[in-house]
Amino acid sequence: MAGERFGRFWAAATISSFGTAVTAVAMPVLVVRDLEASAFAVGVVNAAQFLPYAVLGLVAGAYADRWRRQRVLVWSSLGRAFALGAIPVLWACGTLGVWTLVALLLAFGAFSVFGFAATQSLLPRLVPRSRLVAANARLDQGDAAAQTFGPALGGGLVGLLGAPLAIAIAAVSYVVDALLNARLGIDDSPPERTAERHLRREVVEGLRWTYRHPTLGPLAVSTHVWFLANGAAFTALAIVALREMGLSAVVFGLLVATGGVSRLLGATLAPAMGGRLGTGPTILATRAVHPAAWVLVALAPEVPAGVALLGAALALQGLAMGVENANDTGYWQLVTPDRLLGRANATRRSVNRTAGALGAVLGGAALTLFDQGPTLLGIAVVFGMSAAIVGLSPVRRVRSA
Figure (cartoon, rainbow, N blue to C red):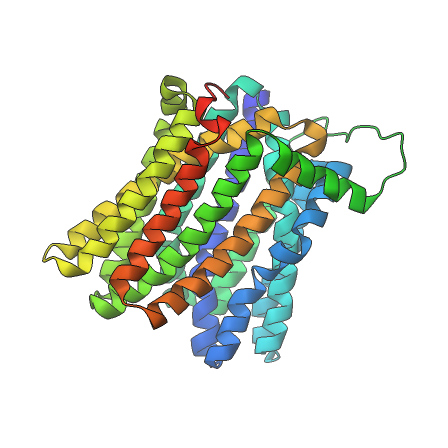
């Protein structure tokens, strides 16, 4: 029964990941081509999808610990389906504008914050604690497959049906997600609380657990630094590859897909790597791969085999991400008490998304002020700082999740 429940959970997560990938392709086409939005409006639309993580992240985590997480998953998926489904309806009625779209994407992001807070917190109720790394690896495999093949599917749907109808299909994926999660059939009662609930106190409790824990605190900070570097890195990568190296969109897409394929491989290897090296050494080793990968990116424009070097760098990055994430997430789920899982997961995701958005802005600003070489090497240094935080902390001695 537990395997069947996890199978539904995995299928729901994978289907919604494909929906997200389709939306990522269709939304820019809708905004730029169909709505003919200005550059400023495009930026506002992009920001609308991530702003709720910064505003609602901590609150969503507290409520994920108060409420039944299965219900949070179901209602958040239905909310996302409604927010996306309203877009093609309004388009067909001729009433869809940029600011209406922004409002719908803010709602979509808000439902996503609650959904993600519940997702990682519910997993320990579905599988034995000894299987958390393997279960997270399975989820990563589904997500990596969606991020690798989903954009091609999205591009085909946009070309065949148009952006609004492609978004309608993405909305349906969240309805399927909700139906599968509604059938999990688990005892997901929140822990009884005798004292009166106090939202601010609960948020503070989650923050203290996350940042004062001897191993989780450094691991959280290291991850925030990684997201800062990664946000800058992929902003710089797009500019360097498409503008400085003059690569076509097809070649650039294939390079990004290379990272997705290697991430899928890394997720497959994650349980074995964690079991052989230990959780802490595995996380440290994979974090150390990222600065080396971005040194290769910095060298790519300067050599004749630059495209091959870019492909190797993105493959290394994807492999490291696939191995690392399952071990990192599994360790968090094992160490954190169930009553704090929602807050711990939401705190990390909220700060990570904010750091990634800040990194994207900083990456663009750095390329405006400096040449590409110093910028990319600076990004490699920040990735190295993320690895150093793990290497100088007790995390490096953690043997098993």
